Image: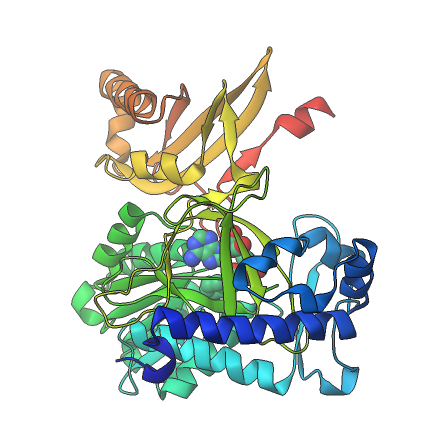
Length: 435
Ligand code: DLL
């Protein structure tokens, strides 16, 4: 079902007209209401009225996470406190969180764009949706919550953790829709199996996953374990939370809510625009946000964009699944690789489970990578020869497919940590080693 047919099926010309009108307005609004933008425009002599076409956006300097940090907590808000009705924040790895605010209109827009991708995945008012994202400052749970209510689904706000109870509720309530990070969904599937539930004991049919990368191969494993159809959903707190883009039932890219977000793909080093279809860093301008609008926000996420209308009837541009973040790229003996590529190589290997960790170290003069992955069957550990053969086969695949040489460690089933939120699979020990 197309939730908002009028918006979601505009012609490219109509989309661009809406974007241009909104871009001009938001640029002026930012200049008039946010000191950072006022000062930055003035310092380079940029008149907000100079933005007359969509491509004029290139004259606007990008906004970065550092700008948010430097203006912690509310320095980038464009409205007085009385107009702010919600605060969220994302916990950075270091220091203070990144804080974002919403007006009533922002929350309304957020529910609308969420309802679009929730409907695009096939969820209707007949569904019972269990939200296993952590409720709190994280945008995931409340974002999905209000979108699902807008669609009319029954929401079970079970939050993350307490996994045995999650599965019990899933069975007893007849949950049809699961909302979680792919990592947590994978774990819930594993636990349900261990607790003796059969797939048919659960009524799950759709999984709305997101907040972290998940390869198609990993997604297929989750679908198999839980007996559902999974879609990938992308967003980030700074821009709104989830809702920036999401897959429809055809799963050939994530539809971007282009009437609210203007997306560009640029070269992460030079910031030059990439040609359509080329991959690069996603930069997003919020076109309608009131409380904390952002101009040309550097997401650091790497993807591609396709503006061809989709066979589902929606015309909004689609982005590829995120390949990784530019700051997540691992350089192993001169070869650049993303954790997602390693995941794609590991997933099809039958004898190993989908749980893995990547350790990067500095040894001698070079960086080394250890891929630690769980065996499905512990009995393999008893046979030195079988273990050696499997290790060699995985090393060989990593070398031929990705061109990297890694140490492969096969470990006992269930010995790798399970995550209830986003997984932290890459451990970079280079810094601590130097310290
Ligand atoms: O993760 C928002 C969200 C919640 C999206 C629930 C989807 C579902 P942050 O915590 O600010 O916001 O993290 C944003 O997570 O820049 C990406 O690097 C990564 N990310 C989010 N969704 C995906 C995805 C939420 N579908 C950061 N695939 C982003 C890959 C994703 N990475």
